[in-house]
Length: 477
Image 1 (cartoon, rainbow, N blue to C red):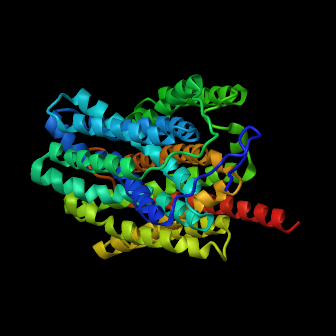
Image 2 (cartoon, rainbow, N blue to C red; image 1 turned 180 degrees about the horizontal axis):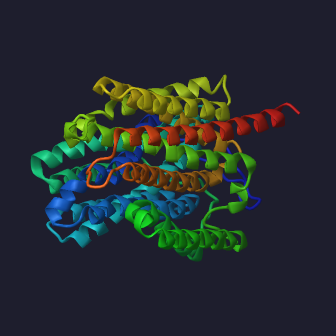
């Protein structure tokens, strides 16, 4: 069996045997789940970190932001390395970095070391695209599409899986015990990868564009900093706007570097393909909306009754609200490959965006009962699961097999930025709805945020429908 040509030379692929495939698929799922869950550990532990290390909540927030940043930077770099012949070594080395970072979060070290450990854990987020590349290279074509879709879904619901477990461990044994969960599962992931990851097909090579990586890192640092520093936008708008302009300029410089490079970090010319560009735009705007609703529901659930609304749930119990998100997200991921035989991927994106918009509408109209929050979270999970499962099909339909990891890694960078902006936008809207002297926003601020989310999902739906019309015109001239 031969793969896509690279540099004019046919690349020999190595499908694994049926018995090995049975072990490979669970391994790919497990690794994708672990790196997503470990990177998300910062979410439920922010308050605990602030208390344990005697730092501000803003400083503690960086335990999440630094993981997202390192993941966003590492993803395209690992995607490029994963396109070469050293993919197995790249996977094992990356997991070793995550294990080392997990150890730093558990050891009784100062706060700076905790941040360093969280940055190392975030590097693991770049492995998701590599898992997709392994699946596409070593599984039969009819099976690889479904496995790639599930890897995409697992990378989303992994955050929801880690949230309640980390919160429970934090309540029982403190923040170090919660981070200990990351050390245990990443060590298991290393052993899994060692036993199951095959070598990459022969005839491939990959070089990392160091200059592009540095400029991209600087741009993403500014983007995620601006997304996390909500007070900067409310108190120093001119400074925030100036930094935003600098970030845009850096991204433009990065694009020029990539276009001129013979070994680009991301093939920008391929990204400009209408199908890929449209899919990334849908992922960016859709990611803003999806993460916005996720943060709205979890924050609403933890708001004490004294605010006039909310349920005053503990961090652990609030994490249980994510169970419908995980379960229905996985169900949607399992169903999507079957539905793809009848409905085109762009239409599935559009339909999933409509479902997420329905979750926003449900949250805006009915949130006085905890069951209604469970329902809204379930609708969100089903929509996100379907969206995540359909997204790889849109991009990989026009991507050579050898560029699978690189193409999907760029999509995951876009997703990370979208998620960060979704969280920031939600925080800004709720902050604007908080009256002077009040700790919590007015209930109406949540409705406003939900309406903004509906608008984001409407844009995502229209973008996806435009992709569907283009594909239809190409296949039926």
